[in-house]
Length: 213
Image 1 (cartoon, rainbow, N blue to C red):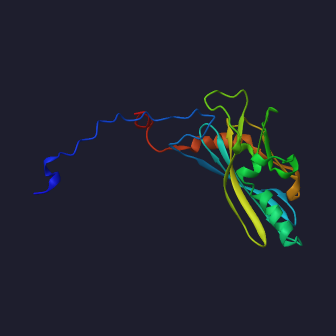
Image 2 (cartoon, one colour):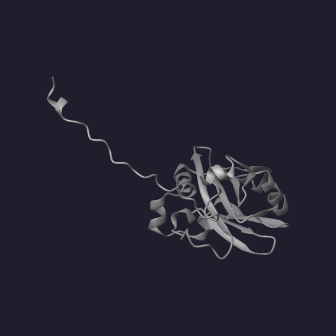
Image 3 (cartoon, rainbow, N blue to C red):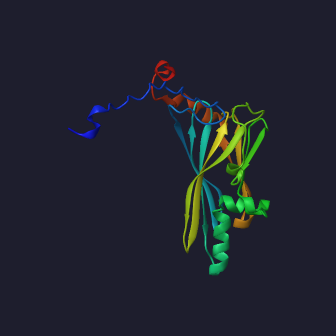
């Protein structure tokens, strides 16, 4: 016999299932889709010290993600200067709040649709607050960092650029600029029709009726 044997353990009250949140199509790619992959493998910029490249585009039924990576190679910078560059290359939230940031020290990114419509983002856009439930007037182009690293010889990073909606047929121009890292305004063109056609190959994880249920 123990002290607690006469005390029953109460059953937890029933908890209703939380309704699943489905973000608007301009906010993120559909959760239950396997995207179609469009290889790109092209340099946006290539110099002796700085390279930016687009590896591929992941196409969803509503938009696409452009996978971008970049790397800065050290030359004759002294340790102190290299440390200062590292602070700009891998900018932290507290550095953003401190202010004193110029457009030359920020990675600027943009797209131009075949019809001339433009949208822009930057490596600081992730620190801003944007309304999510209100449909935007124009295209959405968002910078979403994926990670990076740095050492004594080079620094690298990569990001996913979320684009909504899918472009129409024609040239989709991707533009980038990072003056302090030695990259002037540079661009490549992607085939809008190829991206739109690739959406036919998107595969759903489950039949639509199961997803909605």
